[in-house]
Image 1 (cartoon, one colour):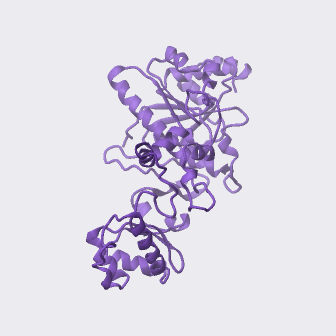
Image 2 (cartoon, rainbow, N blue to C red; image 1 turned 90 degrees about the vertical axis):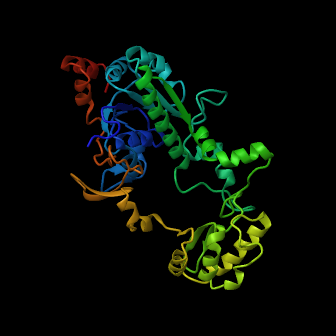
Image 3 (cartoon, rainbow, N blue to C red; image 1 turned 30 degrees about the horizontal axis):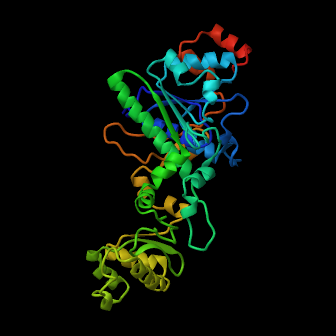
Length: 396
């Protein structure tokens, strides 16, 4: 069955994570994605955490499965000409260069729209395309710092920390693909493409819309997470057990009697303050301190059985290995097993979206650098003689 974006062609000029992950999602939704890489070098992501047994990096595999690879040097005239040939029959050009780079090469939005008025020119940057800091370069960790995520991590008085995931890049990717999808939808009505811009900074602010709204309305910083959330004053947070940890997502009033049964404290059922979902901050601190002592007395498995029996809102804190060993991600297609021509049966990260009529697909094949250069240009209408001329002129 065809995917939702069947027939859409994307030219992915981006590198590392923010752009490539957005393009990977578009592939998962059915688009054809052609990755444009610098000859002899490729995406920087090819060189991060290279896996000896597979000959590719985990970064590149994760963000570029299912794409075709074309090598073009966009800094030279021949490379630019070949790229514009691809633009003629494409729908989206996606990049995450420093703002102004493509314009300097004569490949800005106006340049591409002159070749293909329906083209959607989408770019992800560090701090946004405009303003005094627009030309700064940065990656995920700088993005986390720029938007305040790092400042809100950890415990009061303790060290700051990043997240163990590329959350700034991921938010940038999500916003980039959303903008592209909206532009594709708008083009159905207008027939025109448009420019789409997102940034790591903008994504981090959007990620924390609740916390920023609190600051803007009250003048007060929400504060650090302290193992929970600074604005959620409830039985909400991560609690160590005797051999691990569980995360509690609060205990609404109707679940409080069951919680008292789970911890074998029926006398607390009518507690004058703790039997409410949300409580004053001081009460929440007392409640959490009490439950920290309670949860430390038993194993994660035992608490999971007790809490699940009472339909509580919780989850054991799982490692990546524990997630991979769990059935739930496979049933929903978040993790899938599929065969690779060289690597055999492997488990892959699937698509987080499920669609009934236009199913998504996981990327499997990982292209070698420049594997599809001539093929893609011939499909775009170039002649062999032109390919030879471009090659001799240094296009790839």
